[in-house]
Picture 1 (cartoon, helix red, strand yellow):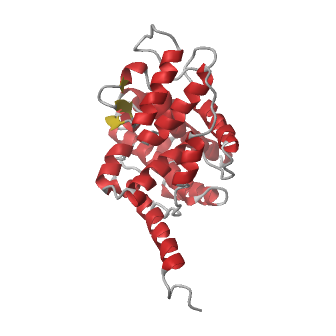
Picture 2 (tube, helix red, strand yellow):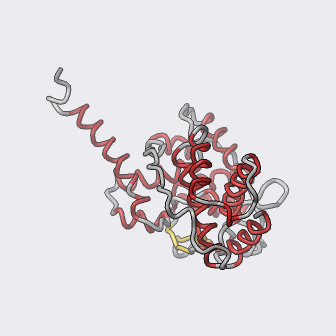
Picture 3 (cartoon, one colour):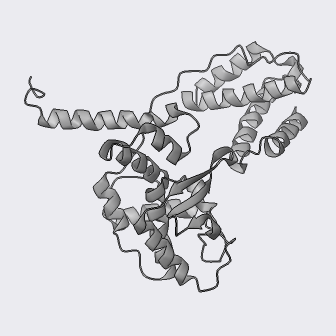
Length: 296
């Protein structure tokens, strides 16, 4: 089984071109299932795994995992066993008979327009690090990028003339998204601070040692900048992406399909969660303004 998991991960990397982060998630999920089989005293042979074994595994997960997490782990098992069927190791997948638990519906955590403006107008400093941090948060909010997409950017991906940036999203899907004027100014100032001769293929955002900036560093910087801006609400860089979509939809009246393209969502259903945020906003305005909304 362990050798098959290794071969499966190679398949995800070479044939499906999945990101290292996604492959690591598959590896963790399958590793957890292998440990379950070992604890149960089951042979590590996929031919001995049936639906009842998988049901016992899911029952164990229900004690300590959310429905969303269980759904992801079940999806991993389905993908793994279907791959084994295609490879001729199994006649049928034992995971196909299992139903996916209905995931809890969470509203995205967002910052208000005023909170975003307070964050972006905070004092970052005029040294290279301060200019870099301002450019990071301006770009995150201006273009609605995932933090993984932002850290993967190279200088060559920016097009100052067309006000665009080329982004490599999930599943190695490339998209072009617009960049606002304030973000472009911040990016220009940051790149100017790095010197006149820049390698177009170099990373866009660098750490103090000259290496590519990590996601963890940006997450830590976000907490510091929120405190400096006097914003007590807990938020992450990904919440700037949520705020980008919500402000376009609720305050700007943008079309849902346009937001889907800007965010790089494969399915419109993923983008539709922002309509629920919009409805909450509409209801709060209604409750505050309608004469009959406060009747006992």
